[in-house]
Image (cartoon, rainbow, N blue to C red; front, side, top):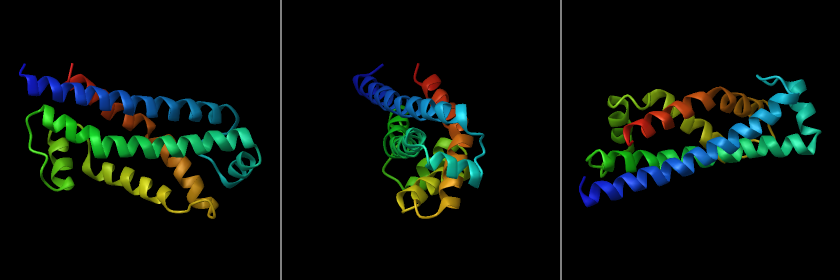
Length: 158
Protein backbone atom coordinates (compact mmCIF):
# COMPACT_ATOMS: atom_id res chain seq x y z
CA UNK A 1 0.00 0.00 0.00
CA UNK A 2 1.48 3.35 -1.02
CA UNK A 3 2.06 6.15 1.43
CA UNK A 4 -0.84 8.16 -0.03
CA UNK A 5 -3.21 5.21 0.27
CA UNK A 6 -2.19 4.73 3.90
CA UNK A 7 -2.84 8.39 4.65
CA UNK A 8 -6.26 8.18 2.97
CA UNK A 9 -7.07 5.01 4.91
CA UNK A 10 -6.16 6.73 8.18
CA UNK A 11 -8.40 9.67 7.23
CA UNK A 12 -11.31 7.35 6.47
CA UNK A 13 -10.79 5.58 9.80
CA UNK A 14 -10.61 8.90 11.69
CA UNK A 15 -13.84 10.03 10.02
CA UNK A 16 -15.45 6.67 10.78
CA UNK A 17 -14.45 6.98 14.44
CA UNK A 18 -16.06 10.42 14.60
CA UNK A 19 -19.22 9.20 12.87
CA UNK A 20 -19.54 6.13 15.10
CA UNK A 21 -19.12 8.37 18.17
CA UNK A 22 -22.00 10.61 17.05
CA UNK A 23 -24.15 7.58 16.25
CA UNK A 24 -23.40 5.94 19.61
CA UNK A 25 -24.41 9.05 21.52
CA UNK A 26 -27.52 9.46 19.36
CA UNK A 27 -28.41 5.81 19.99
CA UNK A 28 -27.85 6.08 23.73
CA UNK A 29 -30.13 9.12 23.94
CA UNK A 30 -32.80 7.34 21.85
CA UNK A 31 -32.53 4.30 24.12
CA UNK A 32 -33.22 6.53 27.13
CA UNK A 33 -36.22 8.09 25.39
CA UNK A 34 -37.53 4.66 24.40
CA UNK A 35 -37.61 3.63 28.07
CA UNK A 36 -40.44 6.09 28.74
CA UNK A 37 -41.94 7.06 25.39
CA UNK A 38 -43.31 4.94 22.57
CA UNK A 39 -41.92 5.58 19.13
CA UNK A 40 -43.23 6.73 16.82
CA UNK A 41 -44.04 9.65 19.10
CA UNK A 42 -47.48 11.18 18.91
CA UNK A 43 -48.50 14.64 20.05
CA UNK A 44 -49.37 13.42 23.57
CA UNK A 45 -46.07 11.64 24.00
CA UNK A 46 -44.22 14.66 22.70
CA UNK A 47 -46.03 17.00 25.09
CA UNK A 48 -45.09 14.67 27.98
CA UNK A 49 -41.48 14.65 26.79
CA UNK A 50 -41.43 18.46 26.71
CA UNK A 51 -42.53 18.61 30.32
CA UNK A 52 -39.59 16.52 31.55
CA UNK A 53 -36.30 18.42 31.40
CA UNK A 54 -34.18 15.24 31.48
CA UNK A 55 -35.96 13.69 28.50
CA UNK A 56 -36.06 16.99 26.68
CA UNK A 57 -32.26 17.03 27.01
CA UNK A 58 -32.13 13.51 25.52
CA UNK A 59 -34.27 14.64 22.58
CA UNK A 60 -31.97 17.63 22.04
CA UNK A 61 -29.00 15.23 22.14
CA UNK A 62 -30.64 13.04 19.47
CA UNK A 63 -31.18 16.01 17.19
CA UNK A 64 -27.73 17.48 17.78
CA UNK A 65 -25.90 14.19 17.23
CA UNK A 66 -27.93 13.42 14.11
CA UNK A 67 -26.92 16.79 12.66
CA UNK A 68 -23.28 16.23 13.53
CA UNK A 69 -23.37 12.70 12.11
CA UNK A 70 -24.93 13.79 8.84
CA UNK A 71 -22.41 16.63 8.52
CA UNK A 72 -19.49 14.30 9.24
CA UNK A 73 -20.64 11.71 6.73
CA UNK A 74 -21.52 14.14 3.96
CA UNK A 75 -18.65 16.58 4.34
CA UNK A 76 -15.80 14.27 5.38
CA UNK A 77 -16.38 10.53 5.36
CA UNK A 78 -17.75 10.09 1.86
CA UNK A 79 -14.98 12.13 0.28
CA UNK A 80 -12.24 10.43 2.28
CA UNK A 81 -13.59 7.03 1.23
CA UNK A 82 -13.52 7.99 -2.44
CA UNK A 83 -9.97 9.32 -2.10
CA UNK A 84 -8.98 6.03 -0.49
CA UNK A 85 -10.60 4.20 -3.41
CA UNK A 86 -8.52 6.30 -5.84
CA UNK A 87 -11.47 8.37 -7.04
CA UNK A 88 -11.50 12.03 -7.95
CA UNK A 89 -13.55 14.14 -5.52
CA UNK A 90 -13.27 17.41 -7.45
CA UNK A 91 -16.78 17.07 -8.78
CA UNK A 92 -20.31 18.05 -7.76
CA UNK A 93 -21.60 16.40 -4.61
CA UNK A 94 -24.34 14.62 -6.58
CA UNK A 95 -21.62 12.88 -8.59
CA UNK A 96 -19.96 11.82 -5.34
CA UNK A 97 -23.26 10.42 -4.11
CA UNK A 98 -23.83 8.61 -7.40
CA UNK A 99 -20.36 7.05 -7.12
CA UNK A 100 -21.17 5.88 -3.58
CA UNK A 101 -24.44 4.40 -4.84
CA UNK A 102 -22.52 2.49 -7.54
CA UNK A 103 -20.31 1.14 -4.75
CA UNK A 104 -23.51 0.01 -2.97
CA UNK A 105 -22.81 2.27 0.04
CA UNK A 106 -25.84 4.54 -0.11
CA UNK A 107 -29.10 5.07 -1.93
CA UNK A 108 -28.97 8.61 -3.35
CA UNK A 109 -32.68 9.28 -2.80
CA UNK A 110 -32.43 8.10 0.79
CA UNK A 111 -29.37 10.26 1.39
CA UNK A 112 -31.29 13.30 0.12
CA UNK A 113 -34.04 12.48 2.64
CA UNK A 114 -31.39 12.37 5.38
CA UNK A 115 -29.93 15.66 4.18
CA UNK A 116 -33.38 17.26 3.97
CA UNK A 117 -34.07 16.18 7.53
CA UNK A 118 -30.75 17.73 8.60
CA UNK A 119 -31.71 20.96 6.81
CA UNK A 120 -35.09 20.94 8.53
CA UNK A 121 -33.28 20.75 11.86
CA UNK A 122 -31.11 23.72 10.92
CA UNK A 123 -34.24 25.84 10.70
CA UNK A 124 -36.19 26.73 13.81
CA UNK A 125 -38.34 23.66 14.43
CA UNK A 126 -39.06 24.35 18.10
CA UNK A 127 -42.16 26.43 17.43
CA UNK A 128 -43.83 23.63 15.50
CA UNK A 129 -44.60 20.47 17.46
CA UNK A 130 -45.49 18.45 14.37
CA UNK A 131 -42.14 19.22 12.74
CA UNK A 132 -40.27 18.34 15.95
CA UNK A 133 -42.24 15.08 16.31
CA UNK A 134 -41.49 14.21 12.69
CA UNK A 135 -37.79 14.93 13.18
CA UNK A 136 -37.49 12.68 16.23
CA UNK A 137 -39.52 9.89 14.63
CA UNK A 138 -37.51 10.09 11.41
CA UNK A 139 -34.18 9.98 13.24
CA UNK A 140 -35.36 6.98 15.23
CA UNK A 141 -36.31 5.26 11.99
CA UNK A 142 -33.08 6.18 10.15
CA UNK A 143 -30.67 5.10 12.89
CA UNK A 144 -30.33 1.57 11.52
CA UNK A 145 -29.67 2.76 7.97
CA UNK A 146 -26.97 5.15 9.15
CA UNK A 147 -25.31 2.30 11.05
CA UNK A 148 -25.44 0.12 7.93
CA UNK A 149 -23.73 2.82 5.85
CA UNK A 150 -20.95 3.17 8.44
CA UNK A 151 -20.52 -0.60 8.74
CA UNK A 152 -20.35 -0.98 4.95
CA UNK A 153 -17.68 1.71 4.73
CA UNK A 154 -15.73 0.14 7.58
CA UNK A 155 -15.82 -3.23 5.83
CA UNK A 156 -14.32 -1.63 2.71
CA UNK A 157 -11.28 -0.22 4.51
CA UNK A 158 -10.33 -3.17 6.72
